[in-house]
Amino acid sequence: MAIIFDDKKSINDLLKKPEIHPGSFASLYKRHNAGLTLVCHDMEQEKREQEELAKIYETRSERKKKLLFDNLDLIFRHKDEILETPRYANIDVHYAIKAGGCYIGPISTSKYYHFAGTLVNINLKLGTLLELWENEQFKISCKCGGTAVIHYFSGSPLSGASIAAATCPKCKEIIHNIRNRGFGNYTGLLLTKLYANTEKVAKSITAKWKLAESEYGKKVAERKAPIWYGMGAEFHGDGESCNLETMINELKLKEFDQQQ
Ligand SMILES: [Zn+2]
Image 1 (cartoon, rainbow, N blue to C red):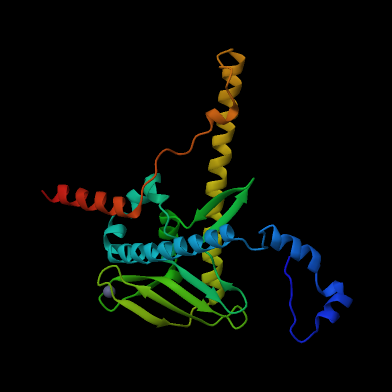
Image 2 (cartoon, protein in one colour):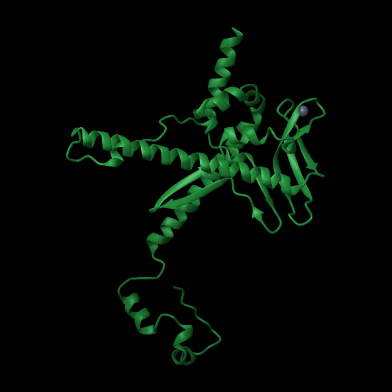
């Protein structure tokens, strides 16, 4: 609820028209005396801390993006291994793609969902990104002979015009000003991949919960359940997570060992 103070009106106007002033002066006075405000110090502190965390998150994403593109050749050399290894394929790389357009705004590669007050964050995964880059729409020949991959695009859904930028894994050159490619094709391919990404997470959670139900049912039927037991005790995650930094280090060590 917001209280609107309008300096153009006298206090008599406000008193005569309570409908434009949602909180009465009497209640405002009572709240003030009780030390209560509509936006309290704790709420402001929480907002400040959220803003600070967002800044750190942004700096971290920029660093990770640089690391990813600096090591694009290494990543492409191990593409099949990454796709076949869930702890690599599921690494969050939401910062790798920047996209958007007129009327539709930015296309988010990081989605937040609230379930029963619990925040679930589903991000673009490395495996999904590598599959997106398999499409000709997201590839362009580089003058060095390598194939660059598009990581930025914008345009208009009405005219279909677009502009994009790509990075070459071989020479690390950034190719700007890529035009003459349909905006709808970029958007369609990216959104399809993002929806598949979300589906993968949702299906994994559903499967893990079904397993928990089944394990719970078995233990209860066998009368092996302790008194504190509940279905939630059988609910587990993948148990195998990895970050970009670890994966790159592991792949470099592997290549080093193979050269010896
Ligand atoms: Zn190149």
